[in-house]
Amino acid sequence: MLIKNIDTIYNGHKFRSRLEARWAIYFDVIGLKWDYEPEGYMLEDGTKYLPDFWFPQVNMWAEVKRGRFSENELMKVKGLVKGTKFPCLLLEGKPDERSYGVVELDKNNKVIVGDSGGCDCVISMYKDYPVNEHRFYSYTGEICDESFTLMFTDVRSAAQKANSARFEFGEEGI
Image (cartoon, rainbow, N blue to C red):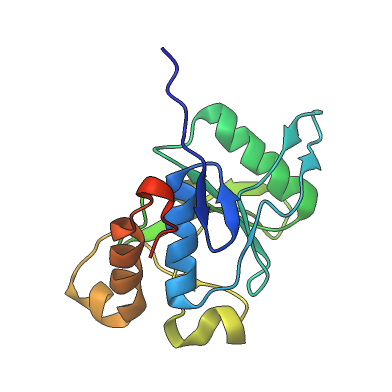
């Protein structure tokens, strides 16, 4: 039996899943500008690909998955990064108080993944990095301790609001 995601409406956008809508809520709560599925691409190998989110403040893509990215999904993200020259966040699961891996190009234009030598990022407006420096705050490690919570005060609130949103009976989230 095939289980299908439920299309979900939030903020005038029809998302392919509630998980994507939760991430949109998260981005709105922290004040991050986003575009949902703005454009599809033909990858080098001929695969058609439609990235989930584009963040104009940081020139970065984001792809949302319920769990860990499969090898096939990761290959598509690598193709997107290679073809567009823009990095892509790997948003695994519901919004949480942690950092997320990034697929990016190194200084030699080689595609690298966050957990294999690249960076990971906290999705936060910490010190207005996304606005002033056109990047997220980089953080090595996914440990959520007291110092993390004190530094990234918007992360906890955004995660709580995104994960508590209700979409039953035509409701549109928060």
